[in-house]
Image (tube, rainbow, N blue to C red; front, side, top):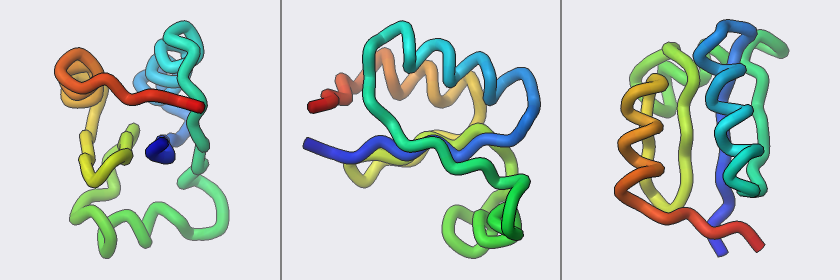
Length: 79
């Protein structure tokens, strides 16, 4: 099973995506980019520091709308 990673900050879009993933019953790992300088690392790894970012199964979606499209078109499975 693919690991699902969600990079978030304390903005509304991040909180909304967390709630949606919880409602779908998906298991995911939350990484708060406001701690330990992780936001800067996002630029190196993903080319952006915008959140939320959902990463799983070699797919990346940045922003609420793109994450919703990815979830609609791909079925991530949690153990």
